[in-house]
Length: 181
Image (cartoon, rainbow, N blue to C red; front, side, top):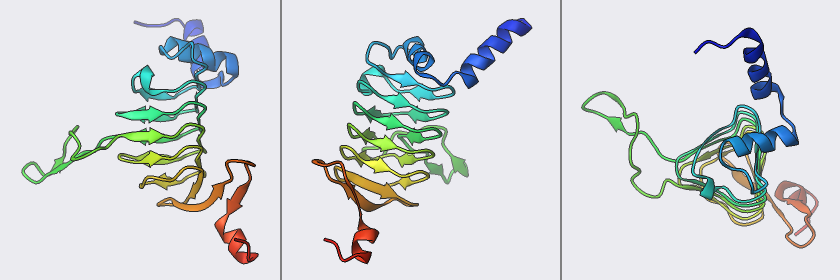
């Protein structure tokens, strides 16, 4: 099917330039995620059942969710994040990796309710993020995390915690430098 120039221009603009609340909600509706305050930015690829995405979730520009991934309610997934559950296995008989395999164990990913994954975060298979985690930009999370953790780095390590009562961030390195508990 060939599109005329005007139709192609409108579709291209909608898919790549319309990152705003109403269009993000319409995009979620078109993907079958509507009616639950889910918003999907342009370019996001979502290959998980809608039942595995909680209410009031934002999925950012060009993010990728695939496999057995569950996203808790009130979660923000920033741009260019990758949440891909599963694995590929190297086959010595063929000399290359398989296209798709069943995991050896639990390769599912769970993002705890109220979490924020900043730009460019990768969460690997088998990781369970606790409730209200802040995962800093560019982090690669390879191990499960406790509730209210602040994670950063490659591989991600806990660099702080969020006080669940006040919402204050407590950065471990800053507290150590200033003799705080």
